[in-house]
Length: 310
Ligand code: G3P
Ligand code: CA
Image 1: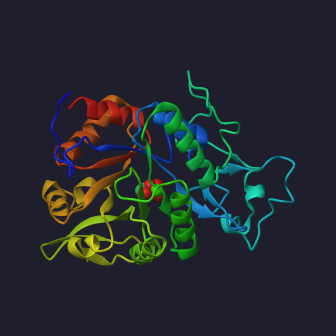
Image 2: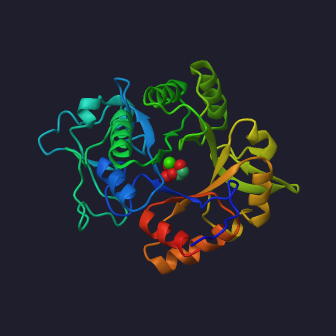
């Protein structure tokens, strides 16, 4: 369809595969990222944690136990450390001996899809994700992007390695399909400084909640509830990743998105996870009409089909 969109670029909104095709396969696995691309995602979204030996891994939680199963013979290795299972207390080798388990409605096999990676359901390093993506784009002549998140609490050493590895793989500029995101507004300043030092200029995204305070459009920082107006955020970021939950209670609106666009900011919403096309249309179409620039989705096929109806 030759629709026109109210996005900042005027292009169709981006389908951002939230933790890969995480509605279908265990999140943040190479299999989930690959399936997401096959389903029409523009961009894959890895959350990043750092292991005890300094590797970045694609993993959402600060702790291992909710999303992995220890191998049955590894009771000693996976006894709690410092009272728990922090990713940062385990080595990469230890973490890669685990098996990522399905969350939500995910199943470990998806009909008609055979992942190309050797260990498709293991916790991948960020480097492995970047290698997979680069190889995929080269083999298929595509330009699929990446949207890594520096997980909070803010760790400048994690953000530095994130930027270093993106740079190593040739992602250096705002002209490329790459966004760097964080929930920490302080962390955005760190990311900006790191990028300036390393000579990169990739787009940065502030994750938060839309709000109108005293008639001023802005976003609040989760955790601190600090309010920042859109002009202030535009000094730290090129885009906003906004929570879409509790729809009616949110300040998110056509006017709010227009104000963000006036401040030069793209607006990406999270997280879209209806399980049928009909429900996807019901949830997503109003945001398309408001000019939202991208959708973090667990079901990239349904979001792609929803956008295609415009
Ligand atoms: O990064 C946008 C969205 O993914 C934030 O929520 O907790 O899924 O990383 P979370
Ligand atoms: Ca995320």
